[in-house]
Image (cartoon, rainbow, N blue to C red; front, side, top):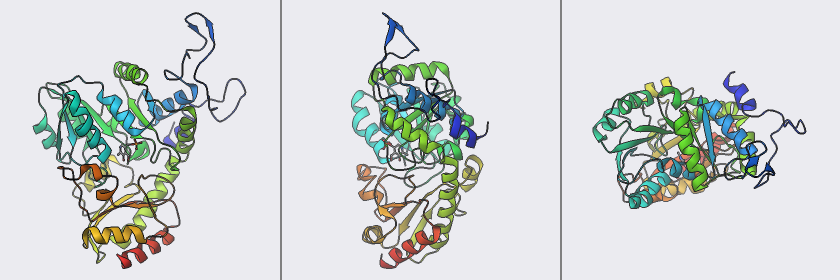
Length: 380
Ligand SMILES: Cc1ncc(COP(=O)(O)O)c(C=O)c1O
């Protein structure tokens, strides 16, 4: 079946009890057993398995072209659980432009457990090759990255990683692209991670995460960790993400259409020093982006000539764009990464330009969005 059909139906048969078309919110922690150690339908306790969560996990697995999915209580919980695959003493290679919270987890938490990290510019796959050691067991990339929207060639990195003697796993955080735009498992990645809080949920009403894999043995190791660590989402949250996913293809097309309209305003604007978008002709990796992504998505970043002060004035001057963290919802958001989402990178090699603005372009009328951004730019 094609993506649009899977988004609506995968993992979600009508409820066997009532025929309910929508997967019920199984708000239960435990399940009646037929006898001691004899669960009725494989359900014992909801940290281990819950029918609403299972529907979401199977839906996401189908969309990513993976065999297996696991849902988590947040994107960071999903990331943390993946990192628990490796032992103390392991070396991890990660992109030097990953989400600030991912950097914080790696740098401020996991280093204390004996992991070491190298953050490299993965837009040149040779940098990944140079960073690999015999202790490297994980390579972590984002593409497009948060917040600079840099593009990494997933297939090229997968080839390098898989031919290395230490056999590391390649993890791709696919949050910005979603499986509608890009399917990393088909390009050679071993693991895909999502913050379902963003485009998959799509309505800024839920925090969640997911991990998708093709390999059964890897899935079983991750499912063990999901249950042992316990960072699972509740059934209501799973229901909300499932509902959001049904309109994902429509939303992603419109996000990109609206973004294209705003790019026209920003490209060459007197106050903009640098504009970033995956498909932009000036992006040195636009060719790779066009190869591995269906469209350029709904995120736009740009640096203002006026620096930090100008960025703050702009972000505080919009009326339709809401000044807020997060992204991927139906409403347009604006933020200053250096002072908000990426504050934790300040002073590190991942620090972002204080004059950087990040837009999450929503689904409002594109002319309304354009007018709002224009009046705010005039005041910046
Ligand atoms: C690319 C990316 N990965 C992971 C996360 C973390 O997800 P969550 O906020 O759901 O924990 C975020 C959050 O902004 C993100 O942008």
